[in-house]
Length: 117
View (cartoon, rainbow, N blue to C red):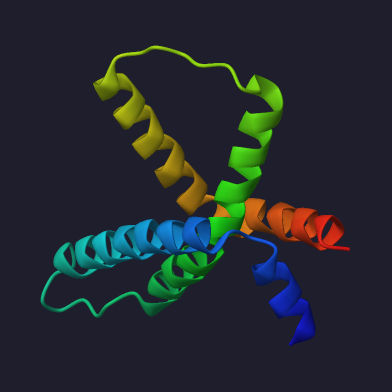
């Protein structure tokens, strides 16, 4: 329990809440499409729903890996781009991170583990 407190305590609360809000909104959207796309005779695919839920729980840690890499590579540079392009790119990146959260999030947890020592 102390380990979880240390891991979650080393992340900014506002960052964590914002990431979880986006994560569970994306989970709700994916679950909705999973339920709506099935036929009447086909039951809900619960293993896929469980993977979506696990991805929703792990998403903030995969987003942390992306944000830390972006900060390291780009530094404090400012880029002026079209707002629609940036919005589409952010949406694409967040969906990608949500999809691969099971694989990327352990890197984020390891990063927090070593950063909070």
